[in-house]
Amino acid sequence: MTRISRRFRSLPIRSRLSLLVAAAVAFAVAAVSMTCWFIVRNQLYEQVDNRLAGMNGTIAPEDVTAYLATCSHTATSSDSTNMRYVYLQLVTADGKFCVLPGLSAGAVRTTATDKAVAANPDPRISTFHNSTDTEGNDVRVKTVAIPLGLGPNRRMAYPDVALMQAVSLEDTEKTLNDLAIVLLLVSGIGVLGASAAGLAVARAGLRPVDKLTEAVEHVARTEDLSIRIPVDEDSDDEVARLSHSFNSMTSALASSRDLQQQLIADAGHELRTPLTSLRTNIELLTRSEETGRPLPPADRMALLASVKAQMTELAALIGDLQELSRSEGQRGERVQVVALRDTVEAALDRARLRGPELTIKADLAPWYVQAEPSALERAIVNILDNAVKFSPEGGTVEVVLDRGVLTVRDHGPGILADELPHVFDRFWRSPSARALPGSGLGLSIVARTVQQAGGTVSLAPAEGGGTVATVRLPGAPTPPPDRI
Image 1 (tube, rainbow, N blue to C red):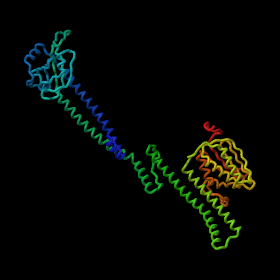
Image 2: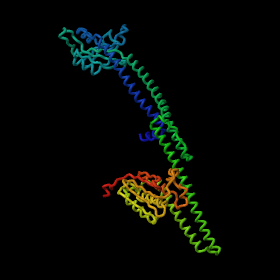
Image 3: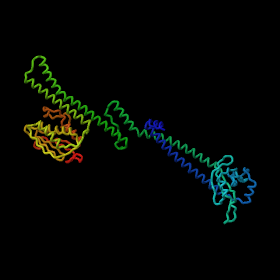
Image 4: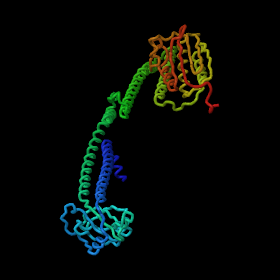
């Protein structure tokens, strides 16, 4: 059984569907055919029983005695065509039987039922059963006690003797055999037709699956993510949903690969500038040492300061790239409940160190969010760094946290309207900020971190000049019970 199950599972799915359909139809056809055969059989037997019930089985007592005295176990010849398939005989309680001469087509084998009727005669009861004659032909038998006819109120039976009336089942069996052959042929045709229909339905139903398989194999072979499976927009079955899911998956993979390639290209472009500058400065220092003509101390100090600044910028760029790539692949690995006010205060301490000449005002209310602590602090630090970077000397930065809405407003030059759609793009920098230090990834990291925490972030021009950054994070003003 296990081997058959394994072989069945190894078949193609359309073959399995065809076999299942054929098996189901075969079972249904067999059940209907057998039910039909038995119904017809019962009806034919009922007709035969009605025919036997209509036969006159009354025999006078003196005739019974005479028949028993001249008992014969073989039938005499009868010229009656109607009697050719009719059997009449007497049976005693001990199983002896006497064929009625001139009235029976042959002798019928007696059964225990016939003996029981003869032993306990009751003229009101007749029994019907199947038997065979002495030549092995099937017959239908009616056995009944022989009434003596002693008046309408004294109807009795002859003791220990019953009358067996039988008719041949040759026509009935022939009809049933013909019906069985017809049902077998119809069943076979039905099963074959069901198998063909099942195979056709399986092929039609699995055609989208075949297309999906071809598409997957094509992607695996060529890594071409532009392939799409045609889907009937009006269909909402499982195959259509699977095709939609595959198309969505390939679109997402293609977009992710394009973003990855764009990130690599942009990173290479951004890395080229500090690396080129570093190489130039180091070559100048090396050449001065090799030629024995040292640079003036002031120029040497300027070159070393430039190298240090470029290395710091390069390290910051690499750190931003690592953060951005980690956020893409490791979403929420260390998510926990974070006190947003504490995180903002820690970021403010770092911002004050970077802009000691600025006035930073803060009004922070308690708020607790689900986020990764280090990533959230880095995002807030990036927002504050932008405010510090673009604030004029002696300017003011206003930070407010109220009911999960963090606003950071500076009084710098602001952002042009046509630049707003690009502020969160990777490596994008406004023309006015390209001379300032930075990698162009800070706001991209902010957007990704806030989105992972379930919030939103936006930048907009502030009234009176400057820029206001708004971060909205879902949470609560009190920590969960398990943190109290």
